[in-house]
Amino acid sequence: MQNTAFLFPGQGSQSVGMLADLAEQFPEVRDSFAEASSVLGYDLWTLTQQDPDGQLNVTEYTQPALLTAGVAVWRAWCSQSENRPRLLAGHSLGEYTALVCAGSIDFADAVGLVALRGRLMQQAVPEGRGGMAAILGLDDEQVIGLCEQVSGENDDSGWLVSAANFNAPGQVVVAGQSEAVGQLTEKAREAGARRAQILPVSVPSHCELMRPAAEQLHQAMLGIDWRVPQIPVVHNVDAGTHEDITEMQQALAAQLYRPVRWTDSVLALQSAGIDAYAECGPGKVLAGLIKRIGNGRGAPMSALAQPDVLQELAAA
Image (tube, one colour):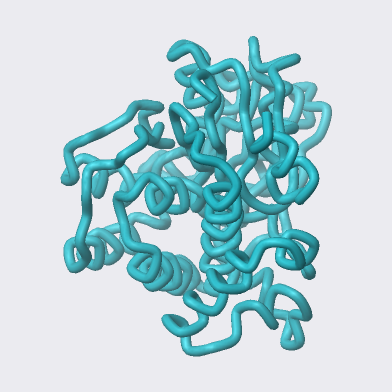
């Protein structure tokens, strides 16, 4: 696994019943959810498997659920193989999962931290005031230019809407105030976007509206123990790795109001010699993005949430 990177997904990869098949074969899955439940004060496994109150897609609950799912898959992997990836990376929330698996943060501390992150994000912008949209078919600079145009037309601050996720070439997510996001989608269609769609989310992540939440989150980070990662983690905000704990905390806090540079992060992995990937969490969202990014096309990509895939890769 010398040239393999494990990737941890963020919000959007959750689904009711996720990891049920893996849990049947690996006790580490249920054990991880039980550990998280003791921190949260509610049954996280029941929430993810049945979602009786419709909370799985609410940010405050989604974030600890996905963190726990990623850690559970990692623990299942570690029970089957002594091989470890050369590098780790996580998309948005997945960066926290990566840091847990790298040994930088204790799992229990991370569960509490991401639950707080979700609450702070929900509280940062009144319902209906913020939004996000996916823009497909325009390059990064075109989308940035349209964001500047819309923001400049409406406000002197210049950030009413901005690029939030550079997910892959021709695939950018924008975030900001609802009206500005709506105007941006119209201009994107006029500019020839293949698709410009408002996303069904209540929290405009990775934009300036999240800066107050980031400041509170950073204060909370100072209250837990941190360690240098045993496996380097590529961070979203700068596509770089950090060994300095202060720098790691600052990168995580800034991630809330600065864009996720996923394309640059994957290119950084490739530049470091990575030529195979494993998605360590539910779903295959990141697998699809990897295929769209440069030399990532054709690179082996394994979905470890599938028991047979995990066992086959562990035995290789």
